[in-house]
Image (cartoon, rainbow, N blue to C red; front, side):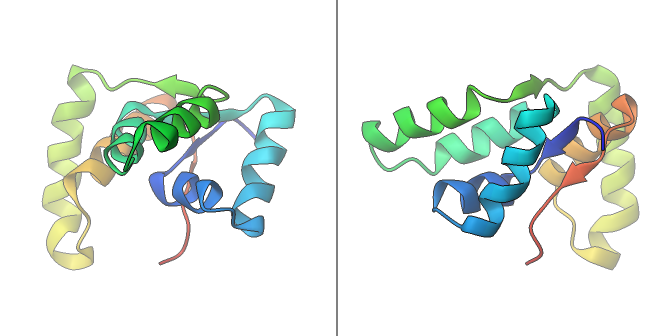
Length: 113
């Protein structure tokens, strides 16, 4: 197992108290491999309904190494969007996360939906 970029769906499930969602990030945290993306941080914070939730989110995400995007990720995300939007319905933010993960050669953990 290597450092893994945890996607928004896993973080949200974890914040909602899902036992299954909590197990995987906890395993990564113990190994020192817990990471996410700036897009995930923003997506989760947008869902905060009040200051209490925002504080809880900040506390949970404080455990993560946050990987930022760079200029090459932006360009690669557009290429990924062109390839996967129509066939799979993939959104641009997911493509941006994927571009960063590809650049860093890191896996992405997401919940099945």
